[in-house]
Length: 251
Length: 307
Image 1: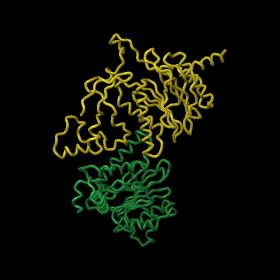
Image 2: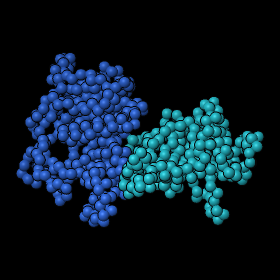
Image 3: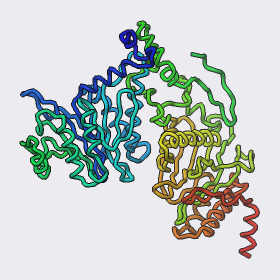
Image 4: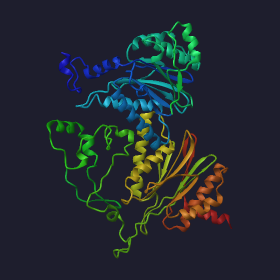
């Protein structure tokens, strides 16, 4: 029955489903996990990096991207679709700055991305974008924000969320362990993100990439992070230890 | 597509109204896709091509461009618009001496308690006073005002369009538009028609998160932020009075008096300005209309006071 209603996505099925959108959400569930945490003074994005082939240059696989100085986004799902959305969002950030003489608010750029995704669920000949995105940043008023969008074009604000493979497990972990106190400290928020990812990441440390934004500071990315303090925490939790660490600043 | 309509006289000049160029893109995206599917030939003009994602026409997410990317009007192709729309008697080309002069005096200045806006109320067509009591200030919202000088039709149309965009901005984003953004929208809208014969000198005044704001925008797309502006045929007289009396630390009463005097003395010397002084005060919690006083009465008062 379902197969008769997923050719042209503009048609509803008899029971009110848009199957192409639901299939897109399945594609998202196949993507590697992303976790986002909104602290009091910091926002954190952590992604599980898929292992790359031996000869592949690791640096060309970027799951976390800056949309502007104060906003960044990570996605789960089809990388190529994400690239298109990120390009459009980056242009819109600058366009907004040019026309309104103010940086975008996180809610505005999320709404833009969500509207773009929705347009593709209502045009014939096009399929939905196969990504969910977590968008984080600080507004001009200094308030941290975390938003999630999905292929249907809806968006919601979250205190902490996960998308991609095993998102449910990570979300349950976050529900148990997230509290306003726990994330009032920057390093605690980062530790929470790492611990949440370690719930589902396969071989531990090497496959985690982290990005943080502190209030009034640019995006800082950690690939194979040197998290000296966090090492102690992780050792004490009997987790596999990280190795080959280096902080890499994002320009 | 419907045929071009004939000339429609409207007020000061003739304006041809055609379907806006963006029309096929915006309305027919679905039809375009169907035509593509059937292998129908694309139209002869680039404007007919189905827009690519986020294509140049940006018909997809038009409202994010604040309608500035889609033209509201269009001009006939074969005509030189500036030449066609230029008022007769311009370069002595023809022996016609009708002067469609656009007389007015408007002014606005910032001071410690906000922004004062003062305008006259005379509208002229040549040496004929067509309206004694026109309103040259458009109240966009309780925190934004726009003044008008130049061609009345142009000012009214574009500033009302600006008011629409400001309202839409508020509805979409949940907060009021900033003065800099509003003035930018107006400047962007008119600069698309640069060289096509618009005449508009406007000051956008308001109070937003960044404090009091004052911008001057004109038909060329000039947009300037400043503390003191005056536009119109009486502006030179107004500048004389303003420059000699303006200080940032004026009290509200002193500021009202300064604005009043500037307009009155400008109307005294400039024949294209007159009527009443309409004065507004932009405060932190919105604008108030201070007064609407006849300039002749004020002039006699000043003359009596100086005797």
